[in-house]
Image (cartoon, rainbow, N blue to C red; front, side, top):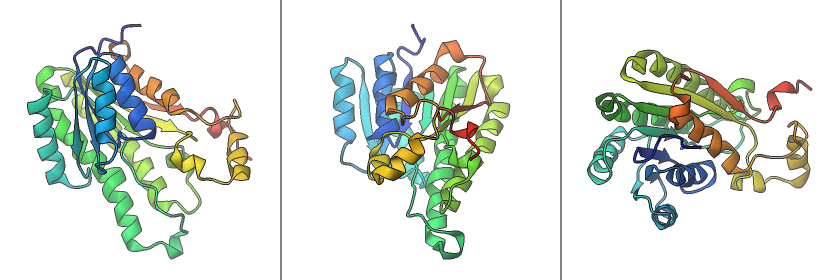
Length: 252
């Protein structure tokens, strides 16, 4: 199925592992030129090399999405290197150590806000001008089922992931006139490094809360993202797509 994104310039944040890496690679397979953004240098060039090996253009950028000056400078570099951004996948996020509210350090709360929410705002705002000029744009922000259900010991993470919904719905309302759509994805458990570090009994308990009794592979989430980036999804905007495999169906 042709997704209609060949030649489009896509930016993926937090793109060196997990959902971000899978999304960057899948967008490239579908014909996009990809800007790979991460706060860590290690791994950026590997993802860029994999994309280029598949015949698509790619470039890597070290950027702290919570720093507005870094974001603006990075998007200017992307425009010079690859062209104006038309697809943005806001994936970068942090999940600090689990801590109940009464014991949560102020710095931990502020870091969650800075990366998980302000980072999404900074990148979205930086992407709007080139999308408006092109009369076409796709913005996908990755939330979490924790943003719907809360998470024990995850006040900062859950709060910021919930707030992404309000931000993206506002973007959808404001930017539709320019041909820009904005949507949110709610993954559940994904077989990333974070999940693999859990105890096996905990993994099994979480798996039992999905209807397929397994965690998602990063590609499962990437395929949903790519669809929302596509021309086939041109009439879909302002939605929250639950890709948790039924976690929200279980109430006990």
